[in-house]
Structures are given as structure tokens and as C-alpha cells.
Image (tube, rainbow, N blue to C red; front, top):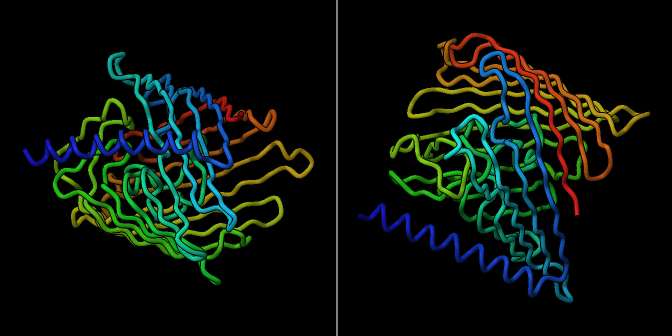
Length: 343
């Protein structure tokens, strides 16, 4: 009974919060930015044959509504609502459609060194909160490490003279809004300012995380289990911009229900100087669900390229090779993407 009531309370809170954000953004915002989004993705996999998605990236249409509120002292409040209507071609027609709420947050400036964030946003762990992987084929470790890229909760963040910091206390449920088995997620990251060419950070994670079947907010995803997975992590991440080259790397080590886990990623991006609309990408990432067992490893090498047709439209292609996907046979995958994001 408590779980049912708790779920209803959380759902009501979600609806009220979204209505309030939209109302405030429409009526009181000083700066208003509204973007439309179209994502078309498809390809062929040696394991799954024809595919229409990659990780949490599926064929979709959506929007982002971004607003800022200011007074004579500058900006004091920012809101963001980013929603997609997505189609998952790998599920039956009854369950293929769903609404994904990616961003639904407000950021309130307390003072020069602290801001309060409430809503649906990135956990403060690893590279993910520093990058916009919302529409890219290449991803960070977040989906394999935590199980999702956004979660519902409250956070504190800011910039100090020598480092940036982020803290977040969230539900541990991802895209949907659930609370079962005392689930929660606490994350924190300390790092160099994002304005530096050479950035690095250290992250910590502790929580009880729920696992869902898919990545939908409405209708809510079914949970794989009512039992939460106990997770502990320490992570290191870095980025280094050197001329046309951008290096990204991260590593995370810890436990899932007392089983030791390890993940690491390295990526090199190259923007062609004479044709800066072109970018070449090379990424290797590996996730080991149980250290000491080779069958629990998931390692992937991906070669990708992207071309910006204009400021709003990007074409992407990627070839990836799975060396060992949790004990399954090796497989290759080719993906093509059309991505539009603009006013």
C-alpha cells in the first residue's frame, strides 16, 4: 500500500512540476529559446539484423524549451524542458511508442558560488554531465555504468576559483518516476573549470538503483525487478582539446550488489581543419559486470564520422565491432543518422 501511494504521490508531483515549469517559462521568462528536433536512425547489426535504435537513441520527434529569468542583478533562474515522442522498432507495436522526458529542470542561483537544481537531470558522475550526448551515436559509460543518463531529484552545483562541483540526490529510477526497495542515487563530482582546454574530474556514486525494460516516461516503463541494485563507484574523467583534436576518457570502478565492476572509455575526435563541418571519431569502451569473468565483459570499438549540413542539421555514420557482448558472439553494426535540432 505504501509503495502504491508513494508512486501516486511522485506521479502527481511530476505532473504539477511540469505544468508549473511550462507556465512560468511562458509567462515570466526574459529570454526564450524553442527548438524543434527530428532524429532518424537505422542500420544493420550482425546480431539483431535491421535495427532502428542505438542505446537510448531511437527514431523520434521532439522539442526543447529553454528559458532564462533575470533582474537588474543578472540571471537568477533557468528552466529547460526537453521531450521526445520516440518509436522503438525492436519492440512490438503496442509498446513501441513512448514519450521520453529528457530534461525537465529548473536551476536557481543562490549566490555567485551555488545553484540549486530540481527536476530531471544528469547525475553528477563521469563525463555525462559535461557533454550533450542527447542526439549522438557515440555515448559515454553512463548507460552501462548507472543504467540511465537522467534521473529525478535535487542537486547543488557551482563554480569556485580553482574547481567546479556538482552534487545530486535522486530517485535512482532514470527516465520513469519510481520509488521501490528504498531506491535512491547520490552522486558528486569535483573537476577543473569547463573553460579549460585540459579538464579532469573525480566522481563518487552510492545508491540503490532500479532497472527498467526501456527508456520511456509516459507510459512508465516496467521495472525488470522490484528489487534495487546496490551500487558504489569511484570515477575519473578527462578531456583535452589540442588544436583539431579532442581526447575524452573516463574510468569507473566499484560494486554492483557486492560484485566488483570496471568500465573504461577512450575517444579521439578530429575536426578536419580545411573542412570543419567534418569530424572523425574513434572510440573504445569496455564494461565488465564481474571482474575475473571474461564472459561478463562488453567491449566495443567504434569508428564514426559526422558532417554538418548547416547549423541545424547533422549527418552521422558509425561502424562498431562488439568483441564480447556479455558472453554472446562477436558482432558488427553499421548505423546511419539524420539529426535536426533548430528553431
